[in-house]
Length: 462
Image (cartoon, rainbow, N blue to C red; front, side, top):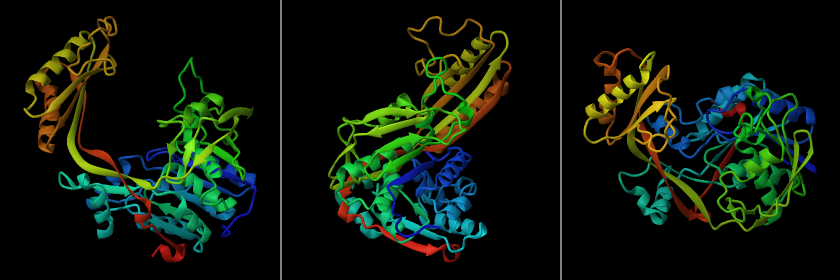
């Protein structure tokens, strides 16, 4: 297990997941690579997209779990190895219930033979958890309580409370909402002892996190485009590792023997991912200036990144406020054989005439026009895109409705096509789900009170 404060000139960061739903077998090669390297290291799981936390809140309120549902699947392959080799594990898989996630991690540690593992819980991001948080949100973003109030309102925390947890000897740090780069920055601050105003160093750490946070995006996953941007062995794409020095020099690589590619092109693509202003990429810890960053290949699947510059952190923290939205209904049915396209178009015409009042609808012919068609299924300005007689066509209806009942009534019409025609439809699939709408708010950072608790697994599992 880990010491309270490592001392080294090199620290290795590995990404174990880039979103909720990422592959659960990709973290093991990363952890094994970190273990072989022998340097101080951490593997980070980033699993909270914008709406993921709101969905976790809704799950918790309806009797389900409020943390990452695949937490065990992510950690079981790597937790024992990480605890054995002193590799810190950091993850925002706590979502809406960090305490619940920490109990699961503690149980897993005990089963793995590590009852003394120290599990940290970082809280304070949930502004709806207590009256003080709700009052803070109401004072600075009163519009958040319009239309029945928010489902979730979580501040994007910075690296500070995670550093506090690591200094307290945590082997595993479980959080809710933390800014993605901050998850990776925290172990670097802890390892190197960077001060809170070492802006260029913090910028380098935030940049390392930005490059790794989406996992395989930087190793060729989101990059791949056959014949144009070829990526070898994409089926086994490796997740990224960053070697970071005390001076802020970054080398991006991946575990040997894994698929994918790491070169100037993949790294530069991720460098600008979700960046609106390269001169001012705002994080809770530092404002990152990317305009002087240099990207240079130093060997096969090794890219050096230098030149990050930083400016003082913002005075306010971003809060993502989520509200219950309307209802989305979808239904699909396939027509195959001679005249399939005509029958699919007839099916869409039937659906158009049968829709209940009060819904907005879109009609698609999948495999023919799902991307380029207008909402009514027509193909304006795209002659020749659809073959005259395709062997198979899938008709799709998507609706938004103010109530679940209206959305369900609309998609039920897709099911009715089985016998109501046209002929020979099959493979019906329907779904109805509530949509979550999001908005941003900003609150003074000093008003957001974080809490850190570190306990041994044998006690946290109770």
